[in-house]
Length: 230
Image (cartoon, rainbow, N blue to C red; front, side):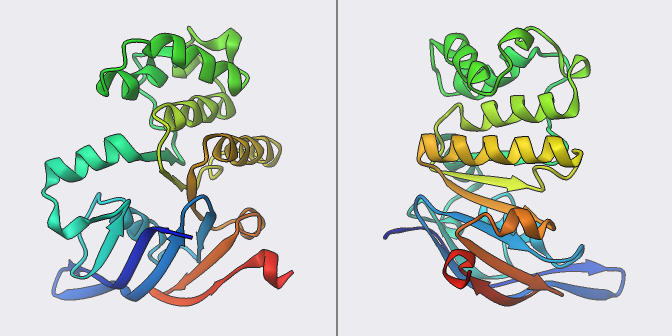
């Protein structure tokens, strides 16, 4: 099966005062198309940094990343932004909805940026898929945390991304709401044929994915297939 993401010998450091903090050290892995993949590890292990590098939101000190057939280091910032706009979706722990827009308008934004003329109708259909038909004209402040994350999921899948990065997608939710969001995330991912990469500290969530990469102290400890290992 073709790889949608290839990471080779990734290194990333940050300067802190007179010290250099090594955040990621010699990280290499690949993710096949149409699979689910989780990155786990304790706080400070480099999970979110790794996700940002893979999505082209930041650049490594050394090593290479190939995303959707493009070597990220060969693209300028505008080209990376275009790649994300056309092929990448994001879901964040804190939802990142625009507070002055309704649920419907929030979902429509990425579609409108792509020039989709039928953005509002497509957005209505997506909000129906995530069970929010009666909340489409509500603003984020009028929605619960679980409802806001449902809007964020609808927005993330609206452009039919090839790959979706989810950073602690259930981190701000209670256990029951988390379970519902997880089911919805995996169901939408299957429906749209997307490759899903989840950063999480939740081992139970990670074990629901096809592959797990474990980080500790910026180093890769293991990659495993929980289904094969079960």
